[in-house]
Length: 447
Image (cartoon, rainbow, N blue to C red; front, top):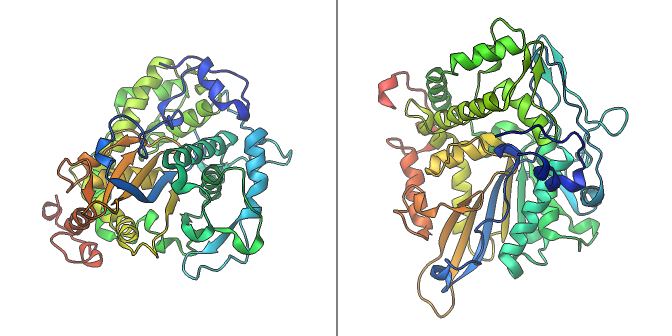
């Protein structure tokens, strides 16, 4: 349950926040996971050594970018960096550069390596809303920087010497274009590398960005059939009418349903982002969202995410088609010759990457992916004295889910070939992704 959160928030003391109120799950992810070889239950890895780590991650905590009318206690976000977060941000432009994902050349116009603030230089840049439509917002918070620094640091510790003293050629990083995602990738990489960053202008780590978003596999390549199936699934999802009515009374809105539509409802965005920054549950002229109502709303949000990405009215198949190209990249990285594959590959995106990809693999846990949610693919190669081929593990937010991955047959380690066959099955009965994405109008043919 939620208690009234603290009114004072210090970025450098993010985890102290959890001591004075229960953070919602979406912003309270534990980074002490099962990655790497540590722990008593890892005997099955005794004959293997790590060969590659691939991380697919959601950005860190952010400001809201949706709007709810008549909120009487709007949260004021601070984007003023302090302590380790400030130190990290000052280092970003010295060891990082954004590069075109196709040409690999540095972008002529580099992104801003600073959090987006308002005129006072401290508060976060606010979104502009007109007639219920908001632009801007969604700014990475100091807490978001902290989350990704900690995630990077925790994975560096989990893999020990393998991720120590990384060189730019050892790492492949790609991000979608949103500033909060680019800066999250920068924070994560800083956490992995640590404080000993050498400032060599010609030897910067690159964050690759597609200039044309339609080419970004994390966004899902154009696929009319997947879009149609997503629409079928969306039409089958209903937000509880009693919750819509309660929210309408609280915020004095006759029809609150438009603010509960889509997989990330407006009311969820406004409430979660405030809570994650130490704020309060939203209030309106009719009162405040209670702890009890918020708990019911969170169940509804999770249900929407589960149905949209894993549902049997098109959600599961749409996730498989949308995420096939990205998963194919992951497989290609694992299949590459040792001399040409990166030691560390990072794909920085949004919840709309983590949820569908987890659903496609059969590992989705039914929760709205938290800020800094991550899926890790570990490639393990046999030691020189051991016969066999390379195998992989999958961990979702630190939990080993390899046995649940489609095609792995419940095994603790899975072959890359098995995953390749699973991906090909996503396209069935078609042979190519392009063919599978051709629009089919008959609902019964694909469900």
